[in-house]
Image (cartoon, rainbow over all chains, first blue to last red; front, side, top):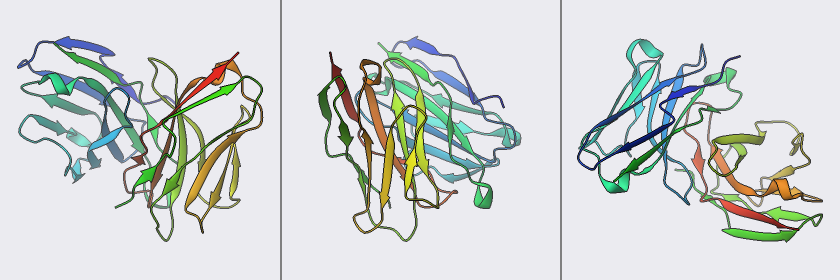
Length: 115
Length: 113
């Protein structure tokens, strides 16, 4: 099966600019996650979607970050305006839920550098 | 909420020596446990997972991990490491298939020739 697709792979922007990342999960995976991985740290959850509804966005900095998952398939994560501390790898993951759960599949990530 | 502790931030080991990377999680009735490996400038790759059944799980490249419920641990072991095993290793846990993975801070394994 095709994996989780993310784009772009790399992005360099200046602080205060805006940026958007795209994720296409594995077909049929109802649950989608966005994680932020700062250099030298483990990934940290930003937001969880179940189909097109938000399940958990408690760690999403809502003053600058937003995410949506229209039609319960693709998802976009946006940062506006970006800060230097947003430099990180942004990972998208998807999974089947409930009794069909078999694990999480991660995309290759988008490496964001804010200068 | 779940939490994961990886006790060693860096582990240097000589080639062909054994290694153990330690992972403890906060207590829960049932958990799913994972080890991921991340090579430099690459994404996360699933190394092995425990969902149910046998408490000893193995990967295709010689790593194994044992789920110990009483000690809330899921330590990763390999009897003989190779230079190519040099990478960052992350332990992760979730309570159910509907909850997010919680990651540890990672252990950097450096294999020395």
